[in-house]
Image 1: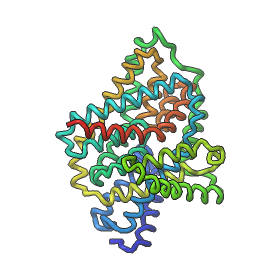
Image 2: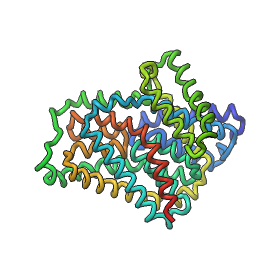
Image 3: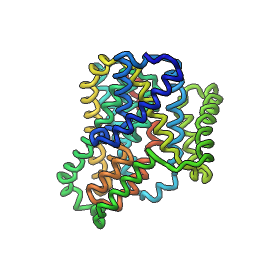
Image 4: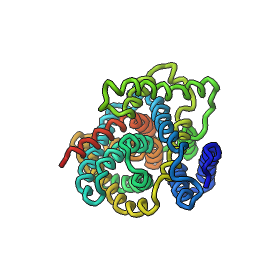
Length: 383
């Protein structure tokens, strides 16, 4: 077993490199992402005795990796960009968030007897993830102090949601189109070439995996999360009921509007790196038997949340007279994040909705944490 802190940290870094190599090499790994692979590798290596289940390195990663990731990724959320997305898509995205809240709230009450006393934490964590993404899943789950085994199982299940929902939305578009056509025209435009689609997908992927980072950028981006953590610690005694994660989210969202911050490069990539470390530790601190036992029930729970979300989005969207492509992209941006909204927009040839979908998806990183904590505590209040 690797117990020396320096050797352990070096091994974790190499594990991230290995997971990224697998993602570049194998299509199936691309589908589930290197972050999920890091969770599974942490789970495997700890349960066969190579990694410890706990150490001072684990404690350090818990304390700093997620705050770093939260602050850095939200720095790319520019409120001014929402104007580029357009009012209809922003309204649809708000409806998608409301649908996620209803889905998480109702499903948590239905599954509470099956999933146990931490169901309220699951509800908040999935609510954050389905109006933001994996970053919000990590932030809310850690902020609510969810048990590592349940977190690992839920994280894997969360990552199984994007592709099935995308395929379901393609089918739903065909089924629902006749009912929307009479009052809204489809947001279709010219078909993009395969080269344009590939370039757009590559640009979105590069933001998370590679960047030309200057020494100036690296120094400032390393300092900002630490400064935000320090300020959060200063503010916590005055408003103790306000979670540290929301302090960080709020400060990062304010900072993201400053032109000086907007010119920094590499924030998304550095945040993704920090999250990989966190997911290795989450896997390593989990009990494999508990993860496997929780899996089937959690999968059904996740499906129930998405089903209610979909019914709410398409139903209320119909009443609001929003067009079907806009609703579809807004829902996918909420559940799967900006990358999957881009992929669906390209696949369905809704060229005009690709960039707006990415914009609202990125904005979801900033707002998902608020929805997650609010949902969790509302579920907890229900006897």
